[in-house]
Image (cartoon, rainbow, N blue to C red; front, side):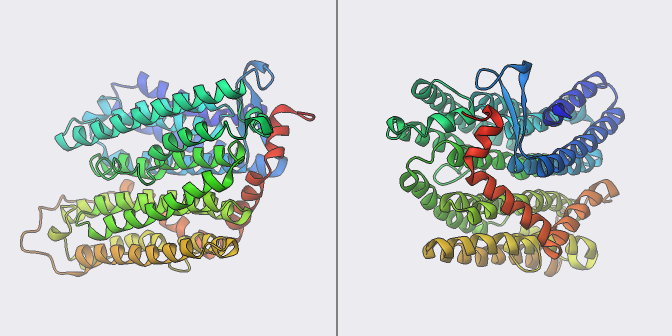
Length: 496
């Protein structure tokens, strides 16, 4: 059971290799990818159960003791993130069965999908800041190719913007790692947490903290570093867009939470104050872009930005309740946002377009699609009794508890504008009559597309109706994030 911690990384890698051997057989690749994703999710759930029952799990690669070797660490936060990765990976694998054409399959779609899942899982489970960079590059390389796979003009244009900004982010990441290593002489996260307690380093750590904030801020798409996202995420097929929307920005948020709760807590007034301002502006600008949009995918892309602001708000408040709210919000948002992009694909297939001007009448022609849209849409807006209501309620309570009334007001207004933009999609795509210049409709919506969408919608409802278990788990994760000493002892041992 000791190697359970690294299995969520090893399994996608093995599945990718199997898919490469099956590169001439599209059907076999689809089956292998779905089976691998199912196994990955099962292992992730097992890991979460073990972490919850036994505490933080640590594996030292090659049996080299930390901080000299490479550590893989699963605490509640990282284990929850790996489970969410498994859920989205399986949902996308099933959705891809009929939505990804054989041409893309022949170009390596399924191996790339599994490599991306491997990179995301590695980023969540690594206990070393340099190896976090390595896993970031693994997932970014695969995402570069997935974004441009198929070679359409819009995809290539979106991929170029995505690549350039993320390469800049990687450059800042490497620079931050170099500065941090020069100051501390270590890159192990637990050891960095221990060394950072030294009063002699307090002033020196502000520079690498700002560099990491910039690097991870680009990946998380927070203000003022978000502009690449709405220019990229609307271009790939729905399955790829759902995978990106659900997971990639959350890797950036995860990295921010990890380093600004474990390492950079020496000057909370400055670092977390910057994060607080950035979170509020991110929420406002993201939702304004969504409110002004007329394309389903662009509206959803801008909402990724605004919702990331809520997650960073919990980190900026830096209390156990606020961090619990961040964990809960990330879990809610990964499920809801990935589902909305999958629903967007169904809307395009049923209505023939993503342009709201050319859509209409779907509530009468596809009533089941209307229901599948409303569940994640209303949850995104924070309406009870869906998951988004409790996620936002937790963050609002944390804001009131901390006396950050402006942030609470901003969060409430952004929630109302989110509801407005979701109602706009409902009105234009579902409620109004079919326009005279409606696009040609592609016949048939297969069960492979509907099943994952329905499953994610059901999870959203169940989280809202049975909120207690996830909320309790989020509270435990928030408390664990505040208790840096427990993480250090788990990795380095007693007396360090």
